[in-house]
Length: 174
Image (cartoon, rainbow, N blue to C red):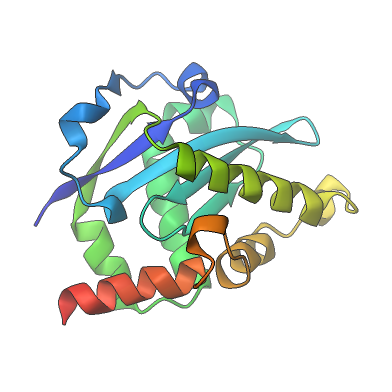
């Protein structure tokens, strides 16, 4: 089953990318596991992209993105998600399944205030994890691991993002 990744882009993200912003109503039937929200924050005056999965809260923080990376954001997101899942030691079959089912990325306006609220929690935690470090001391892999293995986002308090993500794919292939 081929589907698309739908990324609800905040106004800050829309201002950085040259991709067409599609009507989110055209993608309401896409399973939530393939829907994400994206926002930009600034850490030490450098643009960082926050990405969060609507279904599981799985999240990714990309530090210090430059103009060229925003021009090729599709590739940056796909490659970075693969690296995140590998760093989180997700089974390769799950990574492959997710990649096969999401060959295309489309950008829409944001559609969920709940996810935006969770992303605000994410932003606060990323800022807290980096505040006592110089920019060069920030370990992006460790921050991303922490955010997915140890953070309980308000609506998902009963489970961690990584657990929810893996459980989704295990149940869908059972």
